Length: 478
Image 1: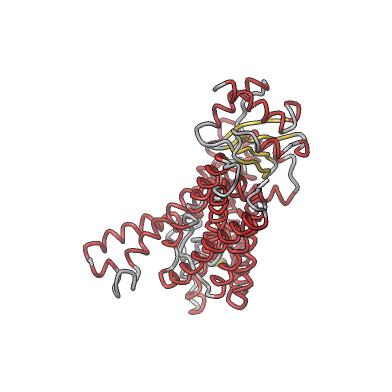
Image 2: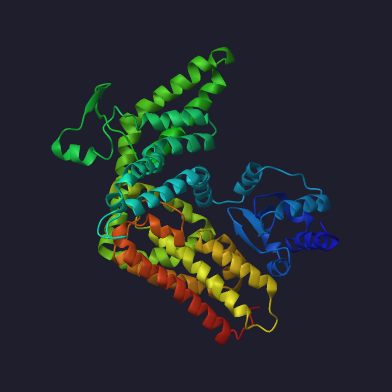
């Protein structure tokens, strides 16, 4: 680390309010993460003028400074040397940050802590299902699907589909693992709990509507109660609530059962009580609640699709800033389970592209600036590519929010595209990578409409941002 960079690290410390303003600090792959005693002491203008800094933002009680992959760990080491702070884990920083949150922020953080760890599995499944779409879609490379034109690919497509759908088939097991871990109990038993709720001996949740209509839903007689013997495939709420109950029981027993018999008592009693509670009370109530939420969202999009698309497309990036976008992941998963597809995720994918297009417009504007800001040029181009591939934070916090008008122009483009997608009830089979690659997750009959929306979020934010930068701001982006 050169002396110049060491001086810049000192400048970072000064810009965030000095060493005395730092409560705890750590870093991730690209960002320094601080819990500050008083965020109002941060001088963002001074901070973002430092060459090392690619952007900054506050989220979930943490003030985060974007440095870049590969460099951030070196910067953190110098930061530790300069300030004497002890390196702590991300969990310690999150725990400290939680103290600065209100109840709503804590609830949002709870959902994020549960669903973010399982996102790689869900995104992988979405991408592979998208590949399966390409192999099985009609009228893509001709009137027949590729597996009909080339029969030797049919078995390959089937194996891909099995691999891809596994994460959604056993989704309660994934959620159970992450939720029980987050609630402080044995995550392995969370997997068991999730598998209990999708046991093949149960009537599948996907077959439940037909069985209910035909009057063939199997039942148990449990403690004098008639209980439906159904599974909860693809459901989110049942396993979330059951996982919380399991964790409460396990921790209660761990405090009271002697160590010599814990293995024989704690897990068996906890899973038995939770299992009965899940089938008798938790499952039916949360299944009904989840269905009600899904029905309400579907009703809005079926009857006022343009309005739903306008609102979600126009404000999704705002939700990302606040962290509230995590609350919609369970809704997406519930929609996929109940409706066979989600109409929220396609709008999300276009919102990502819109933010990237606005960043690309700033990149284009730098060629007309007198100062030729090379740092801004590199940041805008790289963050634009990142957003088009589904990761919007560098574009959002490093470029668009910094100048404000690119962010607004991106919201306008995303809202217009959202109106079109919402009005046409465009569905995605799964959650995949947002941005340009997202088209493979869209149901094939909607590819044309989605492509139109993609064209809008590429052209409109770029044109509006560039015009504003050159005509209104006259190339001066301070």
